[in-house]
Image (cartoon, rainbow, N blue to C red):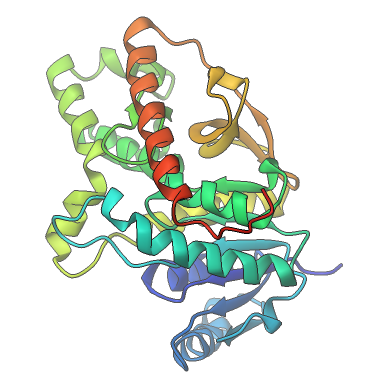
Length: 317
């Protein structure tokens, strides 16, 4: 049986760590692409030399062009400048739209049947950019955001309770950023509603910390941003797609009639399988949740409207 082929664009911290997690899980052969000469080649070779020690059996290739990526089943886009201390995701917009548009066009030319996972920030605008430039059906373009955000929420809840992170399940909606909508009402610990285990004040503090999870790490690192958890979240999505696991995950998926969004990529629970986003699950929301979700969606629409100014003039859409 042919192994899956995964191309990861961007060999920085997030991209290289995606390659690490994907290789460790033996998800497929991996092509690591970056514009910096020697960097993707060196990282791919280094990781390949770990294979005899860790016991994974996949091919790893580094490249500065896209020829090696031909006929990929999955393309993960991590390219873009990182967020720096004091910089909002919105400030990344102009530069990263141009970068993501460029790498998407080159990748889909070589792999027209691939599924795209976008990781670059500001996420909601970048996944919209990749969809516009690729010309792909929206089900084959998805953004990584909610898997990371729920992981942060789960970690903070587990730390507060003193339980295993494996026993915490949660869900969130909306854009990736300060206006994401964590859902304590849909959060449980081994089936026990979290509201029975954590008092409202502490739970509100955890929600706030989750919203600021990326900024907290940026401020601590001083010279970079998070990459272990973002990469792990991305590869969890990749695994569900490549192995057709049909896992329910919160992802930036295209919603038109769903949630009455009208044609934007927004964080919602969806089923990921070999065809990409195979189903979107609509949750029942109370009045406060609907209000927060609506505000988050409006911000996504504003980001996408701003992104349109920097998209190539002669795109497929």
